[in-house]
Amino acid sequence: MFWEGFTNMTTLGKTLWIIVIIKLIFMFFILKPLFSPNYLNKNFKNDQDKANHVRKELIDKP
Amino acid sequence: MDFFNASSVVDWSRLQFAMTAGYHWLFVPLTLGLAVIMSVMETMYVRTGKEEWKHAAKFWMKLFGINFAVGVATGLILEFQFGTNWSNYSWFVGDIFGAPLAIEAIIAFFLEATFISIMFFGWNKVSKKAHLTATWLVTLGATLSALWILIANAWMQYPIGMEFNPETVRNEMVDFWAIALSPVAINKFFHAVVSGWGTGAAFVVAISAWFLIKKRHNDFALKSIQIGAIFGFISFVLLAITGDGSGYEVAQKQPMKLAAMEGLYEGKEGAGLVALGVLHPSKSDKSNYDDENDAFLFKIELPKLLSLMGYRNFNAFVPGIKDIIEGGYTLPDGTMALSFEEKKMRGEKAIKALANYQVAKEEGRNDEAAGFEAELQENFAYFGYGYLASPERTIPNVPLIFYSFRIMVMIGFYYILLFAMVWYFYYKKTLTANRWILYVSLWSLPLAYLAGQVGWIVAEVGRQPWAIQDILPVKVAVSSLEVGSVITSFILFAVLFSALLIADISIMLKQIKKGPEDTDTDSVY
Picture 1 (cartoon, rainbow over the protein chains, first blue to last red):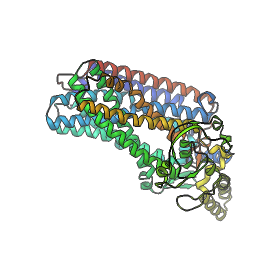
Picture 2: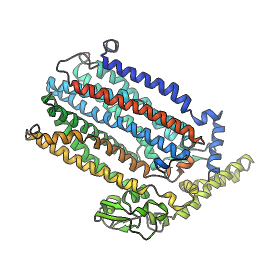
Picture 3: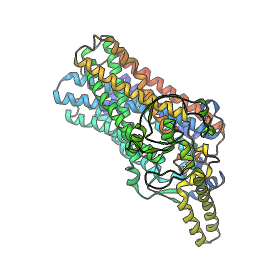
Picture 4: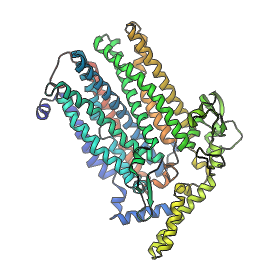
């Protein structure tokens, strides 16, 4: 059923799949790594370092 | 903070989140609403065997599919931002935020993904009842997706079921059910989902009205408008009921938000609900919260209704902004409300205890560390107040919240009336003769979307300055980023979402112009 559904897809269905794929590629291969990286993962090696950083932020921010 | 004065990382991060959440909420409500309507129509088809219902269900299913495909995964942009812009928050909330989102991904997404294929490709491939089951399961999956993110959001408004671990600097979940079944979460879920139903109904009625205006596919449009008007009327009545429930929860858990929604500076017993009003401009400056000016230039008030809504008692005392800052009034649980200064003192104690705990731990003074931990836990409920320099920092943007709330409520009542009138004309078989109601139905559609947007403004701007109520202000939750990088990602997200919205609207308009198919085919795709 799935195979038949995909192979007989109308222009609308194909257009929507193209939009979904382009969107996901843009989100996960451009936006996420280049413009929206995880701040803690990028700057700290392990959970202890991350915890120390956040603790420092919480204590020093006032 | 407003758009034109945004300058800091926290301002731009908030704007970015508001912009992406706002765009995301253009896709979600239509998905939620159309899902139910197409499921109801297919149910009518299975029960009556009439092909017209099948054609109607397939047409709305097609528009659902377009909106779903374009909108799907746009919520992930919000999750990106938690890791980038709100890293202190993300770490601090620990598994409390992560667990509901993981459940959403595992259960709801896979439920949707699995059955959506059967729904679109399975016509004439599976039995009628199996197909109908798949359609309803898609609807259930879409609704469950909303459930888990709303539970996470509700926890930020009313943090419970957790314990702060000073060692890991994270809040750890100690009671999953307290979080999942919190009254704020339950109310928020029903209110948000039902608002999606209302938007879906407004959409179906508007598009059906367009077909009737154009005198095309009249039978289909009349069938659709019938379902849309009844479903819409029920949805907006339920919205009023759940809205009342939300008002009650806000009064109990976030009194400052309620005071801002009502422009209430001086508390009173038997407080009235402001139906219409114009706020005094001097109150735009938060430091004037205790000046002598009346909060309103003009207002029409419904006597005692605010006390009734907030405390289920016509004569209950509703604290105003000044009272909440000064404290000294009796809370619903019988205890005395603390002043801002007392809360700030406790918050500072908690922050200092966190610092001392760490030093004591590092120096091996474990007994002292235990004492500091106890002091931290004792004052943790006010942790966030330690970061606020002055009492006016606890006041959200009153004019924005006050007017947004009134716009939302007025649109809600407007739609109850509109759907009732559409149904009345349909019942009297005079709908097509009264073309004005068709035009009104069509051109009212943006109002349904506006109501959803301003509703979220009330909920989210209303809880400022908090990322987590009373515990973590947004200025501490934010990452130490360069403002330029936030502006860059803001622009990129805006471009992406705008492109998706344009694609969504243009593809849908093309399909709407084509209208429903009169002949059956194997698949709508």
